[in-house]
Length: 151
Image 1 (cartoon, helix red, strand yellow):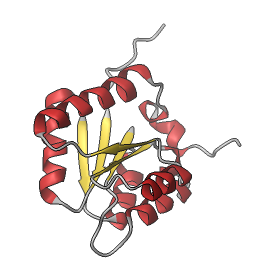
Image 2 (tube, helix red, strand yellow):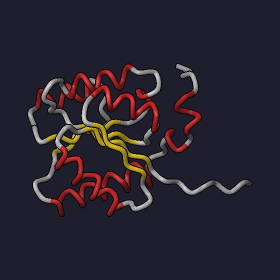
Image 3 (cartoon, one colour):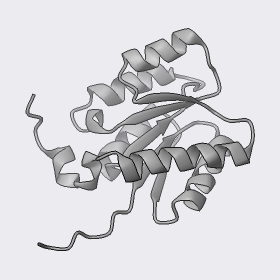
Image 4 (cartoon, helix red, strand yellow):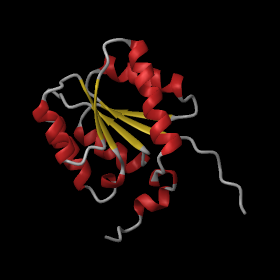
C-alpha cells in the first residue's frame, strides 16, 4: 500500500476585520503549525480564494461593511466547487435569526467569537481537532473537490 503524503490542513478565513483575521490566523498557526492559512476580506475575494486554494475548511464572519455575510455564505454554497467545502460561521453576533439563517444556508456550525485570545485558542484547538483529526474531509483529496458531483 502506498504511503499517504502528510496532511497539511488548508484553512480560509473570510473576515473584513483585519485585527480579528490576524488573531484567528495567529491562533490557528499556533494550534496547527503545519496548516496552510489564507485570508480574504470580502465575498468575491473569498470565493476566488476558495476556488483557487481549495481549503479544507472556511471560517466566515457575518458582518461586512458593504455586503451580508449570509450572502457570502449563500454564494459559496451555490458555487460548483466551493459548495463542497465546510463553512463554520465565526461571529460576534449571537442573534437567533442569524444562527437560523446560517444553518439554513448550510453552514456546518455557528460559533461565537470568544472575547479573549486564550479562549480563541481553545476554540481553534477544538475546531482543528474535529475538522482535521476526527472528520473525514474531501479537501484532503483535492481532485474530489474539482470532480463533477454525483447527486
